[in-house]
Length: 377
Image (cartoon, rainbow, N blue to C red; front, side):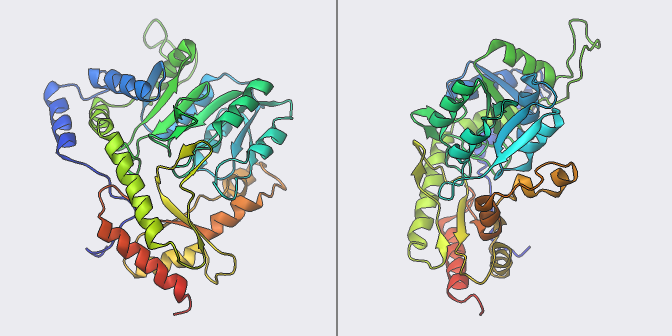
């Protein structure tokens, strides 16, 4: 990779983080048993107004354990947005449940509430998994009301909405369980890592058991199978250091979004992300754009052209109902969800890492404008 290449994400790792990691090593607590893990769990739970935090090895593991913790019956159905990361649907399938995919809103890219309402009429639906997308919250007020009316369990995926509020409550503070990822491209990172949050004592205890092989009262005796999903003390120490600067990180992300908005305000052939919706203001976790249908290039072609100009970019999520792995399982037969299908092919996001500079973002915006203005070069 060329030295002047602008990657999609450069995490913000500062001297505070290095000191926290060094102190953890010096303490001798580097596995999952150290006090750093419990402190990080408490800090994230407090940040989101939750009673319990359960730290795990990554965001996908958080979803797996959260869905399994509900003890739904095999064949029960779970509503989720088709426009999301594969981890969401995979957690449902691995639990022996049936994912019911609904489309996304064309403006916010978050779950279409009306379609979720319609899907919930199926009496076999037992749960819903709202997913906040690219820094913008989904409508948790409407979805929470739906869940209450229908008696549905709620697993809220807040991996892409660190620090974002929705109707006055921080994302991660909704539902029976909520999950976070702390992957390097997230606002708060532990390198790898995740978290489950809940207000339910029994669910919290079950998640702790599932992440630790479901040991019984007598160690090495198991009534059921769990996983080794533990977070290390080193990861937790980094997370604590990062969390202390989360509000500053959030302000910086929003400043990056505002800069792109200004640089691309009159750019042709694209739809820029909404700054706010559904009772919340975007964190601009990623700055996504959707190409007009009339534009002659699709997202993959634009990403290739950006790479030629030294700019990293990524495509939007591919819909769950079009995933080959799920189609081979016989899932989503005949399902068409046109909004997600379109933005998956027409959407991409630009560099937005906290460790990148405004000059990097200016370069990225200029390169995109040049392609938009001269698609055939």
